[in-house]
Image (cartoon, one colour):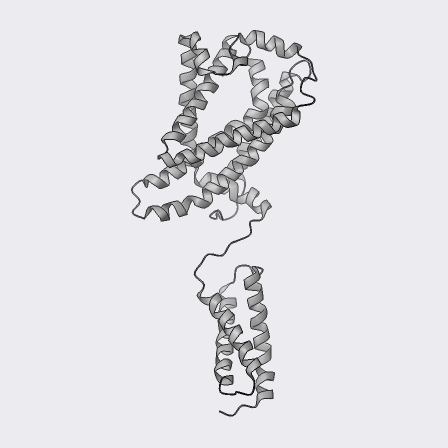
Length: 335
């Protein structure tokens, strides 16, 4: 085959350059999602480059051009026949405003079950203290909760206002670390087919119910709400969401009648689990800060009404965020 090399290169160079730029964008992940017209054009460029390579292979005088086209065609072939899922960069703002709340709603039945288990634990803890006050030492293994709630309230209200001035940061970090460990444990215990997650949620409910009943019976409901609501309005839902993640994992393990392999079931929920547990981490960071810098201060330093109102606002905002955020767009799978 006789080729007019100069005319061949002049005709083909614009298409080769366009294909090379196309490949650079695809390989760098900056091309976005291609529509049908773009895919067809990319395939046309690939076919043209392949045809040009077939022509130039009979022309031994231009080895550099042949190597260039071989590399170009090989890269295009790899992009067309690639079967592995690409790693996508997760933009934080779309993730926080869309992916996280959408994932929560997609798995909301597991959240409802997490709430129900915790409420049963709360009822059990309250009834245990009501019928057997001596059970407090078993149910609430915290020394500062063992005595009379009225005595503790009096001590807290008369304590030195600056008692935590030098330790707020370390105390906040300790709370975040502890609660994050509990949350990860709630998720990990889903590997026990949910039994461990259920027991952890139930036990947390028992403690919460026992504390609430003990303080309410002693007439210290206002103190209890002012103490728990500022951080608990975020911390308790975070633990419930961690339980939700553990139950989602358990559901994937059990299968619930799904006729697909275990590996596929786990792969289907892996993104949701990562999204939920990272969301829990963010909530617990906020809760730890609030508990250290607000919840630990009582009247007369900060009026209980202010703390209760702050906690209620947090709870309403969190509810609106989880129930409404990202609802206008399509609900995607978590990355």
